[in-house]
Amino acid sequence: MRLVATILLLLALGLTLRTPAVEACIHAPKDLEFPIEAGSQRGIVMWDNGREELVLMPGYKLADTKDGKSPEIAESGLVANFKSFAWLVPVPSIPDAYKETATTVFKDMHAFTTVHPRLEELKTDDGPVLTAPEETQEGMQFLEAVNIGEYSIQPIKAKGESGGKELNAWLKDKGFGEVSSASLRWYVKHDWCWLAVRMASDKGLPDKADVKPLQISFKTPRPVYPLKIQDGRGEFDAELWVIVRERLDLSKLRQWGLETPEMRDDYYVQDHRETGFAALPESVRAIGAEQEDFKALRLGAMFCYRISGKLMEAPDGQDVAAWVDDLYFEFEKDAAPKPKDEVKPTPPEEKQPEGDKPEGKSQDKPGDKKPEGKEGQGK
Figure 1 (cartoon, helix red, strand yellow):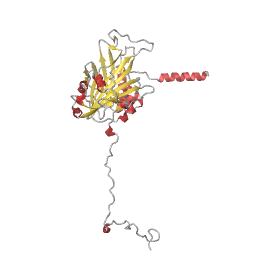
Figure 2 (cartoon, rainbow, N blue to C red):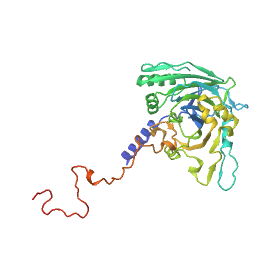
Figure 3 (cartoon, rainbow, N blue to C red):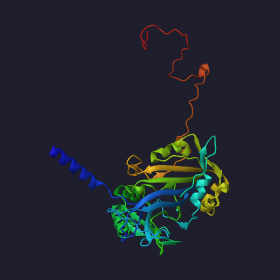
């Protein structure tokens, strides 16, 4: 019995030792003793013509230390020694524009896409805040840094295994934490760009909040939202809005652990699923109002999808580490692609004139009597 108990104890210790530390995608300074945990992930994806405007507003919260010590919060609601954080954002190509977005944009989208029963009204729910380089050899390359409002952004490209190792070492040294090996390999393999974002406030920051919305503009052949980066960083909920000109293939959402209100319960429906650019809230229109690639999106009909995921990365929830790709959205028109060559039906055989029959074929007519004997045997 003692031997069995000892083995079970060792196994338990081994499992504990192998459990990775939970870190949010947002990291506090090294001298802050309180770890940061991931909060809800909110985003808006506006896509058309190979261009995406991505608005991000992830949440965070300071956790207690292992010995139970809690952050000291002043009357202002701020933590005095918590004045900055580092935020890592991967995107599929080097962005060519950044800007801060109105703080009301997500609250406006909540109201615009109110979810209610099909047969009766339901109260609205409130929401809670470069220059392209030349091709480089394997390794890490820093691109031109950008300052937008309270954000400073350092774009980075990493190529090959050595580039991934250099990137992870730099991120750890600068307080951005480390990326899991599986996620790092995927992003490096697909040549994504890394945005090392830092926000600072001399007055201090709250112990839990949503960050100020940041808008990033980049080229991508299909709409995407970076969620694979959350691998191993703790349990979180996701709430996303996708604005596109074509219908999304909603059947593909479940593989990501995501769903629309109607997919969760067909009794409910979302307002403004089919809409137009002019009908969007002013703060949302501002996202794509000046984008040249969105001319068709602004003029015609469009679709606005409210999408959510609950308990992502939870023990019994969606395992981001198992994803083969990052979160891409697919369209209905791509669900059953047409064959490369047009398939034409075989035309019926036409009846030919008596004297114009091809050689080598039997000239017998139905009912003709065949000669006796074996087939092919002459007299």
